[in-house]
Image 1: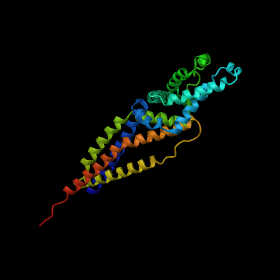
Image 2 (image 1 turned 90 degrees about the vertical axis):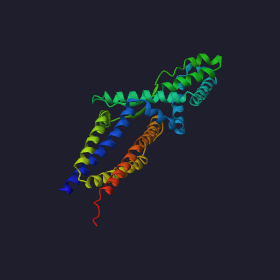
Image 3 (image 1 turned 90 degrees about the horizontal axis):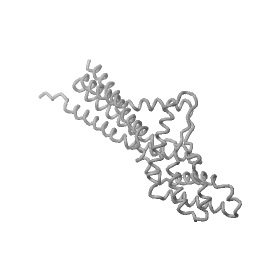
Image 4 (image 1 turned 60 degrees about the vertical axis):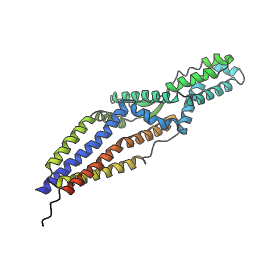
Amino acid sequence: MNFLRTTLSFVLLAIAAALGMGGAAAQWADLAARTPAPARQIVAPVTQDAKVRAALAGALTERAVREIPTIADAVPGLTARLESLIRSAVDASLDDPGIDRAWIAALDSTRAGVVADIETYDGATPPTLWFDLAPFVDLARTQLIAATPERLRPFVDEISWSTELRAPLVRMDPEQTELAASALRWSARWPWLYAGAAILAVGGLVIGPRRGRWAALLTVGLLAAVGLAAANWWAGRIALPSGPGLGPVLVGTLTEGALAHLREWMRPVLYVMLGTAGVGLVGLLFSRPARRR
């Protein structure tokens, strides 16, 4: 009878641990999808990444160069001069003190757009996810106007950067879109996962026999801690997207930043599981039958 109760206690506690860890991951995903807070922590290393900077500069420069008025070709050297001004302005904008705010604004608007595109998917055409360039364009335009000589200002005024103020990140297929939509729906239910974990944990401790409950708690705590450590190791070795262009570079770098933030978010959960194992060990030691003299 005690063996069956111990087994049932272990099963309930294991499910409780899984729900608790799932609730923590779902809470992070919900915050990342619906609030700007995680993006502000993810963006810090992204802004210093040389590959991201080069890809962003290339995308902004390319869009501006396309808008140089064709009449500039009639003046020898003018087009080259304007291209040089554009490149200098873009480089200066990426060193501007406001670049961090631009990154935060771009990530926030991109996040909102991505979530909206996924949530409104109707099963027809899968969405293309876009990265908002408008905050960077504003900085670059300000730098370009400030650095342009008065005699070239009429040509620069024609460069509005008004077309393609976004860059494609990834084109999703139907299966990916459905999976992402389901993940968004489930992530919003993280309070229920926590509640279920608490109820099952109490039930597992109540059902277990005197020593069996603590043995089950110790085992579940250790297994959960090992599982979290393994997941943390695996997340740090995922093959990230790569390729030329702003989209692949951003996807790879932002994914790396998001995984690093998720690992930090889950670190307290690892400590909780280790603490749970410690409580189980203490309970097991104190519940030992007294020796007879």
